[in-house]
Length: 149
Image (cartoon, rainbow, N blue to C red; front, side, top):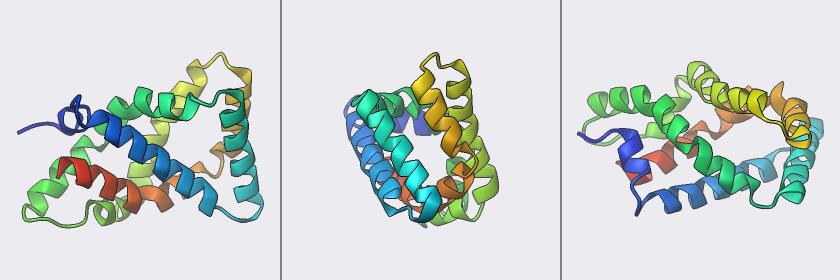
């Protein structure tokens, strides 16, 4: 059986996954409201302005790590729901651990970055990031299931 990485990173699938992830990120950022939403949208706009290709490039860069982080959840999900099911709902039911597993990837990238503007933007929104990642888990799970299911 293929791993999640093998499925999502297949040469004919990977560009579609990256494009759909970018749409997902854009949608999640646009949906934010309040003071936090304003801060996140400003940080996102700063990143887009500073380097228009940064978001898709970052998605492409971290996609293997995301697939690796989601692999144990995917394996459990497919074993438990062999006939289908909702991977987004499955991830959401484990939101604390899944969010932290995903944020560990971006935290590591931020620590290794030498781009002060990007680091500053990330640090601005990191405090509320878990909440936003948790909110995106149903959509992320649906995206993964679309390509791996």
